[in-house]
Length: 276
Image (cartoon, rainbow, N blue to C red; front, side, top):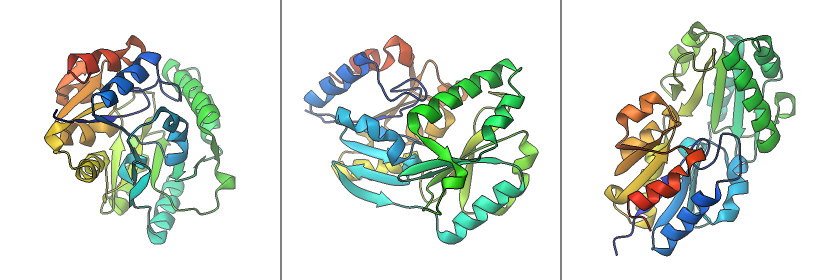
């Protein structure tokens, strides 16, 4: 048979945002696909610790931190944290401009202490109150710690949030040579939010590295995602699918759209594309 490789984003794709428990239907689909000889890999912005509760489900590979750390069949094949110089520069300039930082290391994540207070100040706005509830949920389930406990461990990625785009002007001008600013759709939650990712990697290059490891042509890969940080993954894979609950921008570039994560979307899509 022609073996394929399947890449799954986690939050909003394999699970509801902030959850570590996939729908039973998604796990059935993954197992059936593997029984047919296909590889199934996670491809996520989460760091390794955040995704580790999902490893019990037997995935064949993991692309963590948006491509900054990769394991295949339990073997590390790529590891690219920021340099010390980059780490110092990034942390200082974001702080200087009042940008809230959630930094992701391989074994932990840390967020600025004032971040929740910032969200609570905007709790009267429906979208921001929803974000606050989501943020509290994700901190509880994914163990995001206060920044004061950070001990200068290597950083792979930073999630940023701020009041307005102007706060990103200086950081972008100083850091854009080394880093990409992946900003989510404007005003999605009433604030500016996105991810700072090293230009040495992204989810798309993670797909390339995993396909090379398993010796499967990229054209035989299929990827599922829901937000703009999945763009490179969908563009690089042989076939890219956006969840119905996903970004409208991503839907425009996807090859197809499947049902949402709460509607057994992965199961129906795996069946539709002949993955089991």
